[in-house]
Image (cartoon, rainbow, N blue to C red; front, side, top):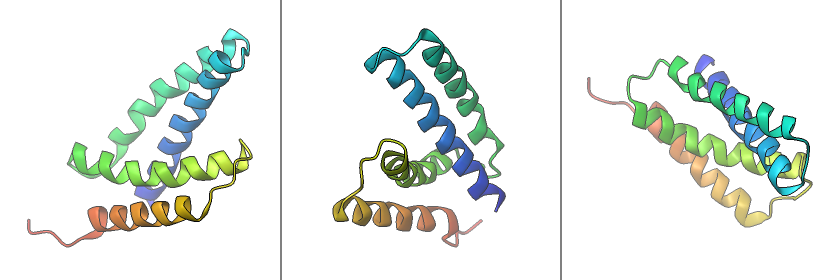
Length: 108
């Protein structure tokens, strides 16, 4: 559960921070949006280091799949851009990949 929580927090930090920078640059929001977004992105950089997995590559590969699902949900709920069937199929395939990466039995 801790691992999933950290993946979710990392995803929300990366997407939320990036979104604030996006609003600053693309929608001409005040510079504070960019500053706050940048700070959140720096914090995001530390969150994956709290994972218990010893492999950087495996953690980031698994996180990438979770990020895709979170990005689609963010786009749907915050940006009001509903995912279509192909988005959901792609997200399901990514989530299946994450499950294999994280939970496959491995020789020590």
